[in-house]
Image 1 (tube, rainbow over the protein chains, first blue to last red):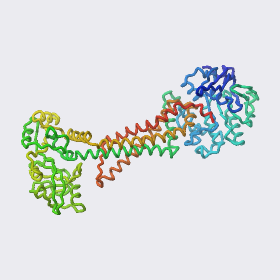
Image 2: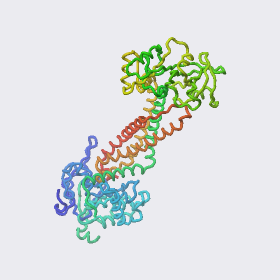
Image 3: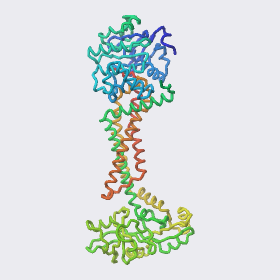
Image 4: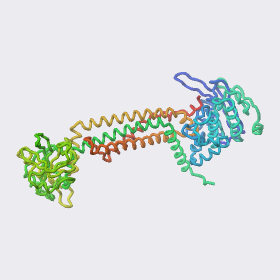
Length: 245
Length: 395
């Protein structure tokens, strides 16, 4: 195991990653040799048409899916060599998730939902909820701590999801279509929050999106098509990006 | 600043937190939660109530043995299979039993059936119990009207209250009622509480000499010999000695009760009938609880997947589902057995339905409920364990 900085400041480095799915006798090749570098301290958008392999790639980077071939180094960890138990631990300790459909637990309050990663990490409930309250306050939800998801707007739910993704201070944040269920204003607000709070030195943020309106928040944009990275467009340098936030 | 926690404390904290989460997920969906609990309650009520009625019926079969307090040993013909299967012995067998070393004392006990003719001309079948004339061993202990001493008067009988209400329905309790048995006059001198009989016939207590006169004439009339072991000797040992020396069967009270119950279990359809009901309760409860629990799990699959994606291990997920099942089981069991107990309490004294809930019934029900929730959670467990955490990324 090495530190992210030993990879030349790269949080993610993939080489010739392929992923095949077998359905009966039909083999579907979702990824066809993906080479991708994501610098630490940056937000990278993964864009491309539906079915191009964005979700498969981000699932592999988040250690929820194993590649069929190739090498994957995330935060200095070789994910391909990891056993199932170590992958679970890796996700628990290093990855924060923001999902398209929020995936908040409907029975929990906003504070309890945001505290879930800390509970999974083994923190005492009272301390976990206190930490979650602090994070929600940073995200402007101080008056919604005791609200359940069905009492919150879509934008507020996504903010709770962001709080949940960041509460345990992960070194990589994976966002899957974070604005697709939101209107333009809430989508913009969500990306501003992610950009302002989540993108930090030593933390990489990978956002899968179809939403062109949020391209302005990216440090780099990787375009995918047919299971490959077509191009990586650098919008600004790390230092510039951090300075602008 | 708090002290750093060790790996054990972190694991315990994680487990506590995740079990709390499981509980919140479970009760968060009230309708589903109540549906699962209902399935378990249904099964628990049916199993506990039917088992209690079953035990109540079995208890009826040994009511007259239970009511005889004092003697530890029952002696009878070797071919007797249960308490109502009386095979009369010659009176001389009493002296043979008395002569066995280790027997402290032994007395005669008559058990049979007689027919009572009331002054209105009605006939009623009665269970007739004849007590030793001198000692009245086996006499009822719960007299609530009259005196046991009056049993020594000519023609005197004591009747159980259920029998009185059956023969003279609606009439207030009154001593001095006269009826005929085998053309002989019988006078009611007392009323007692007694365990109900299997046949629900009225129970008549009288002296042994009186009982044989009330009963149809037979050459041999001695039904049972009630005996007690000498001080310091176990009843089982004295039973063995009696059997060896007299060729009669001798049992402790406990053994005789179980011999009688065993007969009814082996030779009647009672256990099968109740067993079918209990089994159906088990099946239906499992089906309702299982189906609802599975639907609950399916509804929460994305949540479980999100938890797995966030770093919850399969072992913890398994414990979460099992804890949900156990929580449902505990609540369902409590309500179910409680309802069955309330049912039993409500009918006691007001119904002909037999109901007896020994500790084994709640224990059996607990085991059944445990099995139900385990079976109910099996499908759900399988589903969440094979769940791919990457599913959370698929819209």
